[in-house]
Figure 1 (cartoon, rainbow, N blue to C red):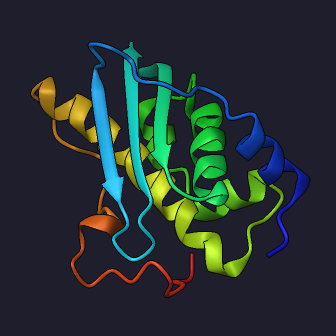
Figure 2 (cartoon, rainbow, N blue to C red; figure 1 turned 135 degrees about the horizontal axis):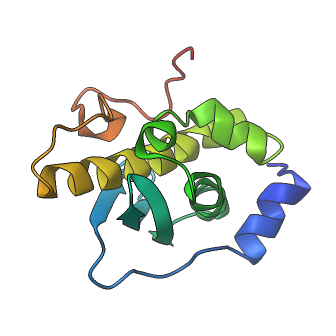
Length: 146
């Protein structure tokens, strides 16, 4: 499998690794098919993602997508953050092999869950919409059109 230089960089030098203690929102997702598990924690200030960290147990692509999605989302409004797509993540990494596109879905789902967790904790309605990994019929290797 051939990865872009950017994927390899984010795998070898991941950004924003860790857990935010007392996070405002937490998103945890997993993929039972490949075994990847991801946790994203955020702090929010004035409906913007002030800080974001991740912990991922998985393949190089899962780590790289986690890293890039945290870089993309930092400073965004909550609405902008939940609009990040798997294609946005893959494009930001210079592409992903088709067999690894499910990692970009995992990263965006983790971010969406963290945002919705923050909103619900604060008595607000969730805004992320459907989370692919919450759907029992979701097949991470079946590519849906954006």
